[in-house]
Length: 113
Length: 117
Image (cartoon, rainbow over all chains, first blue to last red; front, side, top):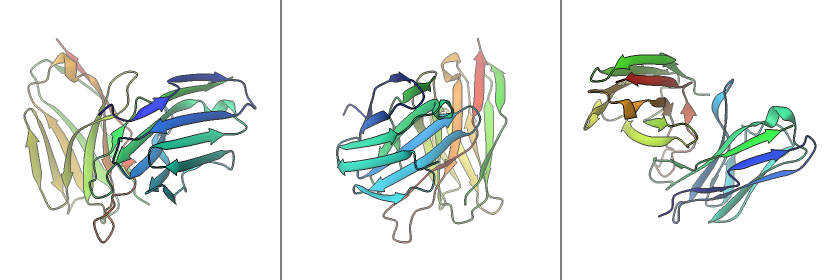
């Protein structure tokens, strides 16, 4: 299996622009997580899905952030409008709900200027 | 919610020495404790995990111990090698009552491990 695939790997955008991050989980996994990593706050969970349904979005910082999972093999995290403080590495992870092990993608490094 | 504290923030050892990283958690309901290794420019990689019904687990040079009473768990790396140099994260999560979903991981702040040749 190719593992969790995220795109793009790097994204540079101007403040106020819309940004969409994409994730393809490991085939067969039914839980999907979006994390954000910064020096100040470490790794923090933004939102997670079970069977394509959002279960906990309490970590989503503001209404500017939204996430969707239209099917079992694809998820997006959208920021609109983006701000410089959104600059971070965003990770997607997936797991089998009955098994605790979560596998991470390579991440998307977002820079908002 | 769950809070995970990790120490030390940096650790420097000589090749061949042992390294120990410690974490404490706050929610006694947490029952799954994984450790992740993150190399520069990569995502965290699961290296070992332990569940609350087990006190210790080993995998070659890596071991993890869990003390549920004290709510702390530790990572032990023996015979360290330069390729062990990375950032290590501990985490904790809770399985639901039916054990069908482990939900979200709460991570520690990370430990930068440097192994000098």
